Length: 465
Ligand SMILES: *[C@@H]1O[C@H](CO)[C@@H](O)[C@H](O)[C@H]1NC(C)=O
Ligand SMILES: *[C@@H]1O[C@H](CO)[C@@H](O)[C@H](O)[C@H]1NC(C)=O
Ligand SMILES: *[C@@H]1O[C@H](CO)[C@@H](O)[C@H](O)[C@H]1NC(C)=O
Ligand SMILES: *[C@@H]1O[C@H](CO)[C@@H](O)[C@H](O)[C@H]1NC(C)=O
Ligand SMILES: *[C@@H]1O[C@H](CO)[C@@H](O)[C@H](O)[C@H]1NC(C)=O
Ligand SMILES: *[C@@H]1O[C@H](CO)[C@@H](O)[C@H](O)[C@H]1NC(C)=O
Image 1 (cartoon, protein in one colour):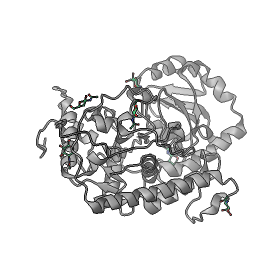
Image 2: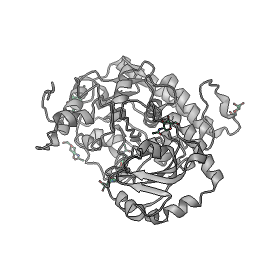
Image 3: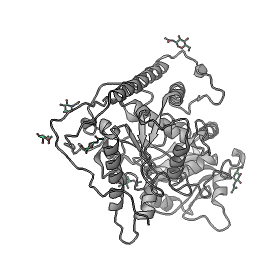
Image 4: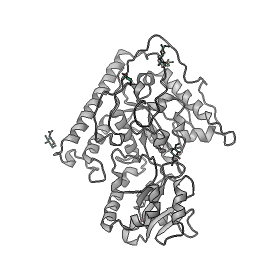
């Protein structure tokens, strides 16, 4: 176990220094979060202190009555921030315009690589416009503070692989990453919750305060050293975690919890995931750290199993699934563990529908496994915000059923006409691009989709010094 180099100050050193100077306004979109992209309506809605008193199930924030020391911002920095905000304002206007101009053809913005189109997207033209503007403008600063293995690093294999992969891709990135913090739109906090748990969390002592210490120290340090945290009260800062305790890791710093952009696999709205500012990203179980060998599957005609699931019985949904369907039906193969001689991957390859119920946490790696193996995902979850649902029309390539419909699973699937199944299959193949893990990343792949989710949330915040 390595010691952290951080001083152990408690985070909230609340100094009352003079009158509260509100130099900061954060404006938020008032519309429904899932439609962040398709309904851009910038309204000057709230100050950051009101951020959490809105409807979205958030309890009123314990207002941190930090009469905070206004950061000393140099004149040049203000000019730079104004310029950045101007750029974002122009981008908003262009995206809005793309949304309004119905006559504009889909490929208005030529792109030899890929042009989003079809029912897969909520609004393909809007997405393309936003994506291209992101490529052109978006700049991310990665704080350099923090040592391996907890910072600038993360697991790149198995269930939490997306956490480490994203952090590593961000470290190596040339397009979005900037070394000039004054020229950045967002600030990335490169800690890995999975690594903090692995290195600092003692399985017997089970002291969860290790998360609190590490993360509040980190925010403390960067908010002392740089003016950016105080300037936005965290609203233009980003953390990312695929760990089950990703949300918990942010509890300890209220501004991180309530204001910052949290990119989480565990996007559970009853755990106060707030899709208006937080982004959901997919859990991908990369056993070898690579996607080689897990892409593709049998053609529809050789998919002899109607629906497949294999997984352990945790959570509330899976017991219901197994109770109803284990050993009950030839066409619906539901197991706790795949029988001897049967390969999990092969079953995914040879089933038409793959059942993806939430387990302990809302996210399930099966969703991406299904997409990879050209199997239509059947989603059974509650309070889960699906990855990239700002832009992706999940209904067009997956089946969503509620827990109470589990007994009707067979009927529901059997009633889907062949032509609808085939259309969904085409879209599953089309959407796969957005879930691909490439090293180095490629346009429109999972890394870029995560960046785009962050871009959207940043677009909806206006910060002024
Ligand atoms: C915050 O909310 C209160 C009460 O809802 C309101 O009076 C106040 O003007 C709001 N502040 C800002 C900056 O919007
Ligand atoms: C915040 O602190 C100031 C100064 O200590 C105090 O006058 C004010 O009542 C406090 N506001 C709230 C909402 O607690
Ligand atoms: C940010 O605010 C905190 C708390 O008020 C203060 O201790 C810190 O010095 C401020 N940071 C900067 C860079 O001014
Ligand atoms: C809509 O888009 C078309 C094609 O790009 C363009 O020619 C036209 O001027 C646009 N209309 C408006 C109102 O901007
Ligand atoms: C699943 O299908 C893909 C593509 O056809 C193939 O590469 C892979 O080997 C198959 N895996 C299994 C376990 O059948
Ligand atoms: C979502 O969060 C709630 C509240 O913490 C919890 O009771 C529920 O089990 C979570 N859902 C899943 C699938 O983990």
